[in-house]
Image (cartoon, rainbow, N blue to C red; front, side, top):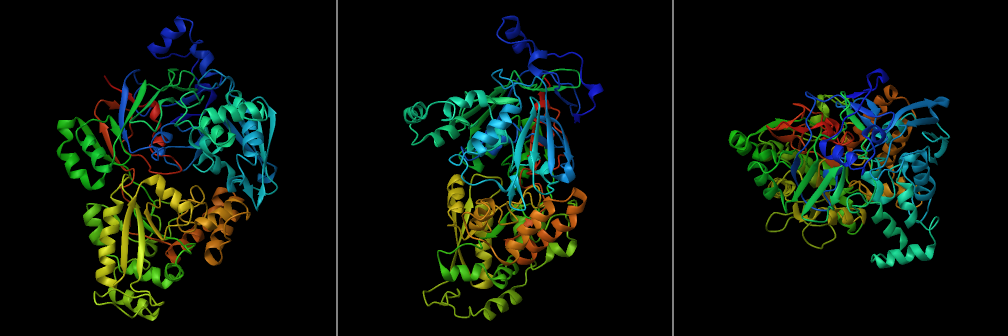
Length: 630
């Protein structure tokens, strides 16, 4: 969908009637001056669209920031629709040289921020030197900016050229830049990351460019304890409606309000193949839904023009029944990650020594896995459309481990599971049949944490598994549903024993290693280990055994060209599956971000989209070329 042939760049440009009137009134420069000399050219899925309209959708609250981030993708590089090839995005081109040690990016001439400020190499240098390089804003440096434990540097070549340089070959850096970890300004600016930032705007909040006294005064007036928190707030595209962005739409009503609003960016650098500046759609209006039930009822009632996030697969029969009445169409988009609802076993949990003993025991984890009735789960929550099994990726993944990997320790076998638990010494039971702790403190109880307003019925799935464990194994598991931001906080604080969530991204361990490895503070199989990895050993806890081996393999693979990474990536995933750190339930289905409700008046949505977290689905379908047919 992205055209890279310079000969196909349109010679002239057009714009929406709304923007044309502003040009006539002298409020905006001409469209050619706004899109720049090197616009991003997008081939529409089917039609050259028409301008206008407000896209209605739903979101579930401030923690649902990925809802709009996936529509406002602004990574330097991005993925094609199949998420198999890196393509230009904010950067026009890139080159790998010096044996993989230098990656040079060429930016787009004349590109601008949404307020009209030029977008140049200085915006990358400001991020690298004054944000990433500032130990108050970024006390721990990112693992994706390092290879073999050594951080890279950034050099400005000219106004549209920057070079990222590393001490060792880092061929995987190109994919990192296209992915969510590095991301872009809209996605990661709130944590002072994102590779670039609107330097001219943000300097007023930075003590290097504005006096510390003045910055502190502004922070206090805005009710922030210090300049760091204030700066990050001002660089948060979800909250600060004054923040310049380069995305197709900009936020006009922040994410912490009942109606999240966005409007077209008059300086967006993308055009279609006939020179029409994108996006086609004027505005996006997302209405807060307090839970999945409310959001899905609204979608069934055709209150949304297009919605793929949080659509409940279990309600597809109801959607199909109302398809004609609601004037919409239901489409399935397939994902290849192994499980839509994995039970993430925290290998760093240490608040209860006995519970830690069990969830860090491979035999115990395998027993829990073999005590699950996945066929029952599949029928109850997936309509029988999923593939019951482990967390291993599906056959369409380049890192597919073979059919046996999907069944490894992941088939119901109550007798074998109980034998494992008995051999571990968990033989004593209370009158209700539940197994007792070895320390004499009563019943062994596991704590399972879920989120309610997200994707599929994680809580219902966890409760059914809890019942299966009680019935089949005599293991008591308490299920607690919390708000998503609270879960994130508790996870980072190493308070969770078991989290239930999708292990999306594990179909490629190099592009999204957060779920299958102890990679970051939000990696539920090892948040303290993730802190250690991200900080280069400065904080957190160093993992050992196969957890550490995974990270070492990840680092090794990043230094090799893509075709040489496959065998290493398979070994990373094999360790995840063999150790059952993420106990799979059912996957390779459309359950998570794969049921698309598309209004029949809503054009250019592909029939089939490759579901991918690195690809930021539905971002890889290029929402800026969606349009209203009438």
